[in-house]
Length: 432
Image (cartoon, rainbow, N blue to C red):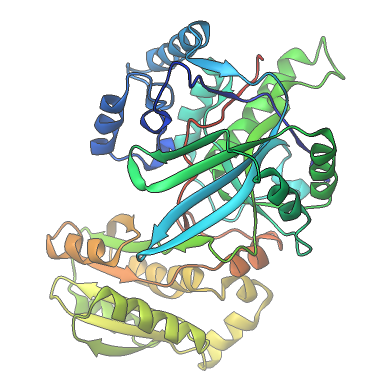
Protein backbone atom coordinates (compact mmCIF):
# COMPACT_ATOMS: atom_id res chain seq x y z
CA UNK A 1 0.00 0.00 0.00
CA UNK A 2 1.33 3.44 -0.96
CA UNK A 3 0.43 6.07 1.61
CA UNK A 4 0.09 9.64 0.38
CA UNK A 5 -0.93 12.58 2.55
CA UNK A 6 -1.69 16.29 2.13
CA UNK A 7 0.62 18.84 3.73
CA UNK A 8 0.81 22.42 4.95
CA UNK A 9 3.25 23.51 2.28
CA UNK A 10 5.97 26.08 2.80
CA UNK A 11 6.04 28.65 0.01
CA UNK A 12 7.09 32.19 -0.89
CA UNK A 13 4.93 34.98 0.49
CA UNK A 14 3.47 36.73 -2.55
CA UNK A 15 2.87 39.89 -0.52
CA UNK A 16 6.64 40.28 -0.19
CA UNK A 17 7.98 38.38 -3.21
CA UNK A 18 6.13 40.06 -6.05
CA UNK A 19 7.67 37.99 -8.84
CA UNK A 20 7.76 34.27 -8.00
CA UNK A 21 9.49 33.55 -11.32
CA UNK A 22 12.67 35.17 -9.98
CA UNK A 23 12.98 33.00 -6.87
CA UNK A 24 12.49 29.49 -8.28
CA UNK A 25 15.19 27.36 -9.89
CA UNK A 26 15.79 24.02 -11.60
CA UNK A 27 16.68 21.08 -9.32
CA UNK A 28 20.11 21.47 -7.73
CA UNK A 29 21.76 18.77 -9.88
CA UNK A 30 20.96 20.31 -13.27
CA UNK A 31 22.16 23.86 -12.64
CA UNK A 32 25.33 24.60 -14.64
CA UNK A 33 27.72 27.23 -13.29
CA UNK A 34 26.64 30.05 -15.64
CA UNK A 35 23.03 29.54 -14.55
CA UNK A 36 24.02 29.57 -10.87
CA UNK A 37 25.26 33.13 -11.23
CA UNK A 38 22.10 34.09 -13.13
CA UNK A 39 19.91 32.71 -10.33
CA UNK A 40 21.85 34.49 -7.59
CA UNK A 41 21.44 37.73 -9.58
CA UNK A 42 17.70 37.29 -10.28
CA UNK A 43 16.67 37.87 -6.67
CA UNK A 44 18.50 37.76 -3.30
CA UNK A 45 15.79 35.36 -2.11
CA UNK A 46 16.21 32.87 -4.94
CA UNK A 47 15.94 29.29 -3.69
CA UNK A 48 19.48 28.61 -4.91
CA UNK A 49 20.69 30.23 -1.66
CA UNK A 50 19.17 27.22 0.14
CA UNK A 51 19.84 24.34 -2.25
CA UNK A 52 23.37 25.40 -3.27
CA UNK A 53 24.46 27.62 -0.37
CA UNK A 54 27.77 29.43 -0.23
CA UNK A 55 30.55 28.45 2.13
CA UNK A 56 33.10 25.69 2.42
CA UNK A 57 32.76 22.16 3.77
CA UNK A 58 30.04 21.84 6.44
CA UNK A 59 29.83 25.62 6.84
CA UNK A 60 27.60 25.89 3.77
CA UNK A 61 24.94 23.64 5.32
CA UNK A 62 24.84 25.80 8.45
CA UNK A 63 24.56 28.86 6.22
CA UNK A 64 21.52 27.32 4.49
CA UNK A 65 19.90 26.68 7.87
CA UNK A 66 20.47 30.28 9.00
CA UNK A 67 19.04 31.68 5.75
CA UNK A 68 15.99 29.40 5.96
CA UNK A 69 15.30 30.35 9.58
CA UNK A 70 15.62 34.06 8.81
CA UNK A 71 13.33 33.85 5.77
CA UNK A 72 10.65 32.11 7.82
CA UNK A 73 11.05 34.60 10.67
CA UNK A 74 10.77 37.53 8.24
CA UNK A 75 7.75 35.99 6.48
CA UNK A 76 9.62 35.63 3.19
CA UNK A 77 8.54 32.00 3.41
CA UNK A 78 5.19 31.16 4.98
CA UNK A 79 3.24 28.00 5.76
CA UNK A 80 -0.16 27.14 4.33
CA UNK A 81 -2.90 27.55 6.93
CA UNK A 82 -4.46 24.21 5.95
CA UNK A 83 -3.35 20.81 4.71
CA UNK A 84 -3.70 20.41 0.96
CA UNK A 85 -2.79 18.41 -2.03
CA UNK A 86 -1.46 20.79 -4.68
CA UNK A 87 -2.57 20.21 -8.27
CA UNK A 88 0.43 20.91 -10.49
CA UNK A 89 0.58 21.82 -14.17
CA UNK A 90 3.75 22.40 -16.17
CA UNK A 91 3.56 23.85 -19.66
CA UNK A 92 6.67 23.51 -21.84
CA UNK A 93 7.95 23.35 -25.40
CA UNK A 94 9.68 20.55 -27.33
CA UNK A 95 10.64 21.06 -30.99
CA UNK A 96 8.45 24.17 -31.12
CA UNK A 97 5.41 22.20 -29.94
CA UNK A 98 3.69 23.10 -26.67
CA UNK A 99 3.16 20.26 -24.21
CA UNK A 100 1.60 20.00 -20.77
CA UNK A 101 1.75 17.61 -17.83
CA UNK A 102 -0.81 17.62 -15.03
CA UNK A 103 -0.48 15.90 -11.65
CA UNK A 104 -0.45 16.66 -7.96
CA UNK A 105 2.00 17.27 -5.13
CA UNK A 106 1.73 15.63 -1.72
CA UNK A 107 3.67 13.57 0.80
CA UNK A 108 4.63 9.93 0.32
CA UNK A 109 5.47 7.62 3.20
CA UNK A 110 9.09 6.57 2.60
CA UNK A 111 9.57 2.85 2.11
CA UNK A 112 12.65 0.74 1.26
CA UNK A 113 12.77 -0.26 -2.41
CA UNK A 114 12.57 -3.92 -1.35
CA UNK A 115 8.87 -3.48 -0.51
CA UNK A 116 8.16 -2.75 -4.19
CA UNK A 117 5.87 0.19 -3.49
CA UNK A 118 8.24 2.97 -4.47
CA UNK A 119 10.41 1.71 -7.32
CA UNK A 120 13.64 3.11 -8.82
CA UNK A 121 14.30 2.84 -12.52
CA UNK A 122 18.04 3.59 -12.71
CA UNK A 123 21.20 3.29 -10.63
CA UNK A 124 22.51 6.26 -8.66
CA UNK A 125 25.92 7.59 -7.69
CA UNK A 126 26.85 7.88 -4.01
CA UNK A 127 28.56 11.29 -3.89
CA UNK A 128 25.48 13.51 -4.50
CA UNK A 129 23.63 11.65 -1.72
CA UNK A 130 26.23 12.64 0.90
CA UNK A 131 25.81 16.31 -0.01
CA UNK A 132 22.00 16.15 0.10
CA UNK A 133 22.04 14.28 3.43
CA UNK A 134 24.15 17.02 5.01
CA UNK A 135 21.70 19.65 3.74
CA UNK A 136 18.69 17.66 4.96
CA UNK A 137 20.21 17.22 8.42
CA UNK A 138 20.80 20.97 8.71
CA UNK A 139 17.54 22.30 7.28
CA UNK A 140 15.08 19.43 7.89
CA UNK A 141 13.28 20.52 4.74
CA UNK A 142 12.49 19.02 1.34
CA UNK A 143 13.25 21.90 -1.02
CA UNK A 144 13.07 19.73 -4.15
CA UNK A 145 10.43 17.30 -5.32
CA UNK A 146 10.67 13.61 -6.22
CA UNK A 147 8.95 13.15 -9.59
CA UNK A 148 7.03 9.84 -9.75
CA UNK A 149 4.81 7.99 -12.20
CA UNK A 150 1.71 5.99 -11.35
CA UNK A 151 -0.90 4.17 -13.45
CA UNK A 152 -4.57 5.17 -13.35
CA UNK A 153 -6.29 3.63 -16.37
CA UNK A 154 -9.71 4.80 -15.23
CA UNK A 155 -8.58 8.45 -14.90
CA UNK A 156 -10.10 8.72 -11.44
CA UNK A 157 -7.48 11.20 -10.22
CA UNK A 158 -7.78 13.25 -13.40
CA UNK A 159 -11.52 13.67 -12.81
CA UNK A 160 -10.74 15.23 -9.41
CA UNK A 161 -8.06 17.48 -10.89
CA UNK A 162 -10.50 18.78 -13.50
CA UNK A 163 -12.83 19.98 -10.74
CA UNK A 164 -9.98 21.68 -8.90
CA UNK A 165 -8.52 23.53 -11.90
CA UNK A 166 -11.83 25.28 -12.60
CA UNK A 167 -10.75 27.71 -9.88
CA UNK A 168 -8.10 30.40 -10.15
CA UNK A 169 -4.59 28.94 -9.64
CA UNK A 170 -2.82 29.77 -6.41
CA UNK A 171 0.43 30.16 -8.38
CA UNK A 172 0.75 30.99 -12.07
CA UNK A 173 4.27 31.85 -13.14
CA UNK A 174 6.85 31.43 -15.84
CA UNK A 175 10.36 30.39 -14.82
CA UNK A 176 12.78 33.28 -14.64
CA UNK A 177 15.61 30.94 -15.58
CA UNK A 178 13.73 29.62 -18.64
CA UNK A 179 10.75 31.55 -20.01
CA UNK A 180 9.61 28.57 -22.08
CA UNK A 181 8.42 26.91 -18.84
CA UNK A 182 5.21 27.89 -17.10
CA UNK A 183 3.85 26.53 -13.82
CA UNK A 184 0.39 26.59 -12.30
CA UNK A 185 -0.58 25.31 -8.85
CA UNK A 186 -4.04 24.96 -7.32
CA UNK A 187 -4.83 24.10 -3.70
CA UNK A 188 -6.95 20.99 -3.21
CA UNK A 189 -8.28 21.40 0.32
CA UNK A 190 -11.76 19.89 0.08
CA UNK A 191 -11.91 17.00 2.54
CA UNK A 192 -13.84 14.66 0.25
CA UNK A 193 -11.36 15.18 -2.62
CA UNK A 194 -8.38 14.59 -0.32
CA UNK A 195 -9.89 11.37 1.01
CA UNK A 196 -10.65 10.17 -2.50
CA UNK A 197 -7.09 10.81 -3.68
CA UNK A 198 -5.67 8.95 -0.66
CA UNK A 199 -7.97 6.01 -1.37
CA UNK A 200 -7.16 5.87 -5.10
CA UNK A 201 -3.40 6.00 -4.54
CA UNK A 202 -3.43 3.28 -1.88
CA UNK A 203 -3.13 0.39 -4.35
CA UNK A 204 -0.67 2.09 -6.69
CA UNK A 205 3.03 1.57 -7.24
CA UNK A 206 5.18 4.66 -7.70
CA UNK A 207 8.07 4.62 -10.18
CA UNK A 208 10.67 7.30 -9.53
CA UNK A 209 11.14 9.22 -12.78
CA UNK A 210 13.48 11.86 -11.34
CA UNK A 211 14.86 12.39 -7.85
CA UNK A 212 16.43 9.04 -6.95
CA UNK A 213 19.17 10.81 -4.96
CA UNK A 214 16.62 12.84 -3.03
CA UNK A 215 14.53 9.77 -2.24
CA UNK A 216 17.47 7.63 -1.15
CA UNK A 217 18.82 10.49 0.97
CA UNK A 218 15.46 10.85 2.71
CA UNK A 219 15.29 7.10 3.31
CA UNK A 220 18.74 7.20 4.96
CA UNK A 221 17.74 10.25 7.03
CA UNK A 222 14.52 8.58 8.15
CA UNK A 223 16.42 5.48 9.28
CA UNK A 224 19.09 7.54 11.06
CA UNK A 225 16.50 9.69 12.81
CA UNK A 226 14.35 6.75 13.88
CA UNK A 227 17.31 5.01 15.50
CA UNK A 228 17.84 8.11 17.68
CA UNK A 229 14.35 9.23 18.65
CA UNK A 230 12.45 5.95 18.74
CA UNK A 231 13.90 5.07 22.12
CA UNK A 232 11.44 7.59 23.55
CA UNK A 233 8.73 7.64 20.84
CA UNK A 234 8.53 4.08 19.56
CA UNK A 235 5.07 4.28 18.04
CA UNK A 236 4.82 7.95 17.17
CA UNK A 237 4.76 8.95 13.54
CA UNK A 238 7.56 11.29 12.55
CA UNK A 239 7.59 13.96 9.82
CA UNK A 240 10.84 12.43 8.49
CA UNK A 241 8.80 9.38 7.45
CA UNK A 242 7.45 11.31 4.44
CA UNK A 243 8.91 12.99 1.36
CA UNK A 244 7.61 15.75 -0.92
CA UNK A 245 6.43 14.10 -4.14
CA UNK A 246 5.02 14.98 -7.54
CA UNK A 247 2.67 12.32 -8.93
CA UNK A 248 2.10 12.14 -12.70
CA UNK A 249 -0.16 9.57 -14.37
CA UNK A 250 2.07 7.50 -16.66
CA UNK A 251 -0.14 7.34 -19.76
CA UNK A 252 0.04 11.09 -20.35
CA UNK A 253 0.96 11.71 -23.98
CA UNK A 254 3.14 14.74 -23.16
CA UNK A 255 5.54 13.02 -20.75
CA UNK A 256 8.86 13.58 -22.49
CA UNK A 257 12.18 11.74 -22.05
CA UNK A 258 15.43 12.96 -23.60
CA UNK A 259 18.07 10.41 -24.60
CA UNK A 260 21.38 10.61 -22.74
CA UNK A 261 23.92 10.39 -25.56
CA UNK A 262 27.35 9.11 -24.49
CA UNK A 263 30.67 10.90 -25.01
CA UNK A 264 33.86 8.88 -24.51
CA UNK A 265 37.44 10.02 -24.05
CA UNK A 266 40.17 7.36 -24.13
CA UNK A 267 43.51 7.45 -22.36
CA UNK A 268 45.12 6.75 -25.75
CA UNK A 269 42.61 7.25 -28.57
CA UNK A 270 42.95 4.22 -30.88
CA UNK A 271 41.11 5.78 -33.80
CA UNK A 272 37.55 5.09 -34.87
CA UNK A 273 38.50 2.38 -37.39
CA UNK A 274 40.07 0.28 -34.63
CA UNK A 275 37.03 0.77 -32.41
CA UNK A 276 34.64 -0.32 -35.16
CA UNK A 277 36.80 -3.38 -35.87
CA UNK A 278 36.34 -4.58 -32.27
CA UNK A 279 32.54 -4.46 -32.48
CA UNK A 280 32.21 -5.62 -36.09
CA UNK A 281 31.13 -9.14 -35.06
CA UNK A 282 28.15 -7.81 -33.11
CA UNK A 283 26.92 -4.96 -35.33
CA UNK A 284 26.10 -4.24 -38.95
CA UNK A 285 27.96 -1.01 -39.73
CA UNK A 286 26.89 1.54 -42.36
CA UNK A 287 28.90 4.63 -43.26
CA UNK A 288 26.78 7.81 -43.25
CA UNK A 289 27.28 11.39 -44.35
CA UNK A 290 26.92 14.10 -41.72
CA UNK A 291 23.21 14.78 -41.44
CA UNK A 292 20.85 17.05 -39.57
CA UNK A 293 19.64 16.22 -36.07
CA UNK A 294 16.18 15.58 -37.51
CA UNK A 295 17.57 12.95 -39.89
CA UNK A 296 19.61 11.23 -37.17
CA UNK A 297 16.70 11.17 -34.71
CA UNK A 298 14.33 9.96 -37.42
CA UNK A 299 16.57 7.11 -38.53
CA UNK A 300 17.09 5.92 -34.95
CA UNK A 301 13.35 5.94 -34.27
CA UNK A 302 12.55 4.24 -37.57
CA UNK A 303 15.01 1.46 -36.81
CA UNK A 304 13.54 1.01 -33.33
CA UNK A 305 10.02 0.79 -34.78
CA UNK A 306 11.23 -2.23 -36.79
CA UNK A 307 12.47 -3.95 -33.64
CA UNK A 308 16.16 -3.19 -34.23
CA UNK A 309 18.74 -1.98 -31.71
CA UNK A 310 20.62 0.81 -33.44
CA UNK A 311 23.05 3.62 -32.63
CA UNK A 312 25.07 6.26 -34.41
CA UNK A 313 28.74 6.60 -33.59
CA UNK A 314 30.63 9.78 -34.45
CA UNK A 315 34.41 10.26 -34.31
CA UNK A 316 37.13 12.86 -34.67
CA UNK A 317 37.44 12.00 -38.33
CA UNK A 318 34.05 13.70 -38.72
CA UNK A 319 32.56 10.45 -39.94
CA UNK A 320 29.19 9.08 -38.87
CA UNK A 321 28.43 5.37 -38.69
CA UNK A 322 25.07 3.66 -38.18
CA UNK A 323 25.29 0.50 -36.07
CA UNK A 324 22.57 -2.16 -35.86
CA UNK A 325 22.89 -5.14 -33.51
CA UNK A 326 23.11 -8.53 -35.27
CA UNK A 327 20.35 -9.96 -33.10
CA UNK A 328 19.98 -12.98 -35.40
CA UNK A 329 23.40 -14.37 -34.40
CA UNK A 330 23.04 -17.41 -32.06
CA UNK A 331 25.11 -15.99 -29.19
CA UNK A 332 23.34 -12.62 -29.18
CA UNK A 333 19.91 -14.17 -29.80
CA UNK A 334 20.30 -16.58 -26.86
CA UNK A 335 21.48 -13.76 -24.59
CA UNK A 336 18.47 -11.62 -25.44
CA UNK A 337 16.03 -14.50 -24.92
CA UNK A 338 17.27 -15.35 -21.42
CA UNK A 339 15.48 -14.13 -18.29
CA UNK A 340 18.12 -11.45 -17.79
CA UNK A 341 18.05 -10.79 -21.51
CA UNK A 342 14.46 -9.64 -21.35
CA UNK A 343 15.68 -6.89 -19.05
CA UNK A 344 18.71 -6.20 -21.24
CA UNK A 345 16.73 -5.97 -24.45
CA UNK A 346 16.29 -2.20 -24.59
CA UNK A 347 18.62 0.25 -26.26
CA UNK A 348 20.46 1.61 -23.22
CA UNK A 349 21.36 -1.89 -21.96
CA UNK A 350 22.33 -3.12 -25.44
CA UNK A 351 24.58 -0.08 -25.65
CA UNK A 352 26.23 -0.91 -22.33
CA UNK A 353 26.65 -4.67 -22.85
CA UNK A 354 27.50 -4.99 -26.53
CA UNK A 355 29.19 -1.66 -27.23
CA UNK A 356 30.59 0.28 -24.28
CA UNK A 357 31.74 -2.75 -22.27
CA UNK A 358 33.47 -4.24 -25.33
CA UNK A 359 35.16 -0.95 -26.17
CA UNK A 360 36.23 -0.44 -22.55
CA UNK A 361 37.70 -3.95 -22.39
CA UNK A 362 39.90 -3.31 -25.43
CA UNK A 363 40.82 0.35 -24.86
CA UNK A 364 41.25 2.21 -21.57
CA UNK A 365 38.47 4.77 -21.10
CA UNK A 366 39.49 7.96 -19.34
CA UNK A 367 36.08 9.66 -19.10
CA UNK A 368 32.44 9.18 -20.06
CA UNK A 369 30.12 12.18 -20.22
CA UNK A 370 26.52 12.72 -21.28
CA UNK A 371 24.45 15.16 -23.28
CA UNK A 372 20.80 15.28 -24.35
CA UNK A 373 21.52 17.06 -27.62
CA UNK A 374 23.04 15.61 -30.80
CA UNK A 375 24.52 18.97 -31.81
CA UNK A 376 26.31 19.24 -28.47
CA UNK A 377 27.71 15.70 -28.80
CA UNK A 378 29.11 16.45 -32.26
CA UNK A 379 30.51 19.81 -31.15
CA UNK A 380 32.36 18.30 -28.19
CA UNK A 381 33.94 15.64 -30.40
CA UNK A 382 34.88 18.22 -33.06
CA UNK A 383 36.48 20.36 -30.31
CA UNK A 384 38.46 17.28 -29.22
CA UNK A 385 37.03 17.37 -25.73
CA UNK A 386 36.00 13.76 -26.42
CA UNK A 387 37.08 11.15 -28.94
CA UNK A 388 33.74 9.62 -29.93
CA UNK A 389 30.06 10.27 -29.41
CA UNK A 390 27.40 7.55 -29.33
CA UNK A 391 23.87 8.68 -30.22
CA UNK A 392 20.86 6.62 -29.15
CA UNK A 393 17.09 6.51 -28.79
CA UNK A 394 15.51 7.53 -25.47
CA UNK A 395 13.84 4.91 -23.29
CA UNK A 396 10.04 5.01 -23.28
CA UNK A 397 7.75 5.17 -20.25
CA UNK A 398 6.41 1.70 -21.11
CA UNK A 399 9.95 0.26 -21.19
CA UNK A 400 10.75 1.87 -17.86
CA UNK A 401 7.53 0.52 -16.30
CA UNK A 402 8.14 -2.98 -17.65
CA UNK A 403 11.71 -3.20 -16.39
CA UNK A 404 11.41 -1.44 -13.03
CA UNK A 405 8.27 -3.28 -11.89
CA UNK A 406 10.18 -6.55 -12.40
CA UNK A 407 12.86 -5.41 -9.98
CA UNK A 408 15.52 -4.35 -12.49
CA UNK A 409 17.21 -0.96 -12.84
CA UNK A 410 18.79 0.72 -15.82
CA UNK A 411 22.39 2.00 -15.78
CA UNK A 412 22.87 5.43 -14.23
CA UNK A 413 22.22 8.38 -16.53
CA UNK A 414 19.85 6.29 -18.67
CA UNK A 415 17.04 8.83 -18.83
CA UNK A 416 16.40 12.54 -18.61
CA UNK A 417 12.76 13.34 -17.97
CA UNK A 418 12.03 16.81 -19.32
CA UNK A 419 11.23 19.25 -17.99
CA UNK A 420 12.26 18.84 -14.38
CA UNK A 421 9.73 20.10 -11.82
CA UNK A 422 11.26 23.31 -10.53
CA UNK A 423 12.44 23.91 -6.97
CA UNK A 424 10.88 26.57 -4.75
CA UNK A 425 7.17 26.50 -5.55
CA UNK A 426 6.15 24.21 -2.68
CA UNK A 427 8.45 22.95 0.10
CA UNK A 428 7.99 20.55 3.03
CA UNK A 429 9.49 21.49 6.41
CA UNK A 430 9.55 18.72 9.01
CA UNK A 431 9.31 21.01 12.03
CA UNK A 432 6.00 22.59 11.06
